[in-house]
Length: 181
Image 1: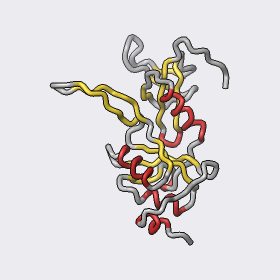
Image 2 (image 1 turned 180 degrees about the horizontal axis):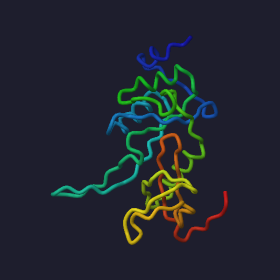
Image 3 (image 1 turned 135 degrees about the horizontal axis):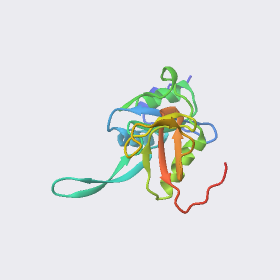
Image 4 (image 1 turned 60 degrees about the vertical axis):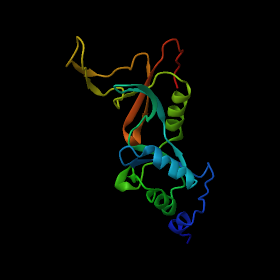
């Protein structure tokens, strides 16, 4: 049996063919997402950290900074073997895999591809509540504040959700044609 912990300590690369792996989410320590993604890349583990640009203001200046779209999470693609999972868990800042009993729940390629497509489109991206059509919701703010009902549609916004981490992002679909999937 190959000892992946020893291989990682000795700097040997863990190889993965793209057709062998599945996407998983790992939870990180607060504000460690970028460091975890860098460390995973050094260890030849495919990682995806969706980033969005935000303008931060201080009393003396403004600066555009890249912030994680989903704070506290990094996505990894790997073959679901115990050795591969242990090699990810050994990275400083990684807390656990997201899923039942810390084993991780696979995330579909379509969900990750959707996030990548949205980020690649250069449209404004907003983090939104994790909502499903048919879900009971309450309006917050405006003239209808406090009104409850069933969500029938999300209007002219496209919401892409990652079920494993219960997070969603939305983009406005102004001037974009939409068709059934």
